[in-house]
Length: 233
Picture 1 (cartoon, rainbow, N blue to C red):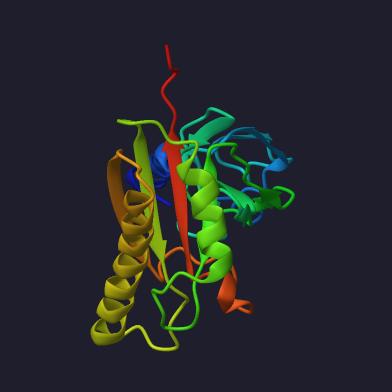
Picture 2: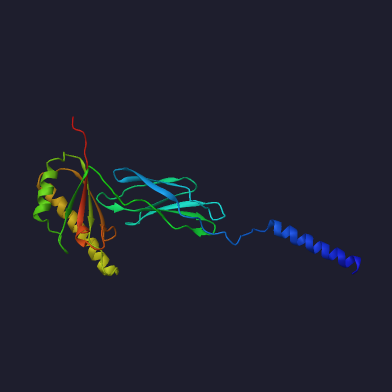
């Protein structure tokens, strides 16, 4: 082999070594992270702080972020490297499972799961309705009569209207459910006003979008009432 040929081979080898030293290397066992561990929550009425521990493995690449989601209602929050985040405006009486997922450049882990947690609050009431009905039943009227006696003039009353989930999610059925949910919230407002409640009413309509149960649809046909009490002098 000529001297020029040996030089050419040497240059080629050096080029390969230099190129490989600057190229990202993905090992055969690099993968997504393992699931986050020890998912816990701290609850403050309808606000929940979700906390967790590091996964056992980052999959061979640094974890870039965490995503937290709920099994019901589509609530979520996210962080970069922090091991906690906060989800607000959860619904009382609903039992949630909180799911934490770790992300690296190859993808997302399996979810680390919390224990099922029922959201509690001392400032709400709940009334249910019959199938496709916005009429208040006798039990609902008893609940609302008792509630009316506790509301002072000018206090804030939030009414959240819901329906059961629909077998089909076409626009016609969805819109009808939203109308029915509004009628239910309006029926509660009208009853409270008739009982002499003078308050700042706020209606929020969710229809079928925040269900409590797939198998017990009667639980979904509801209006949740929040009262923000103002201390009386």
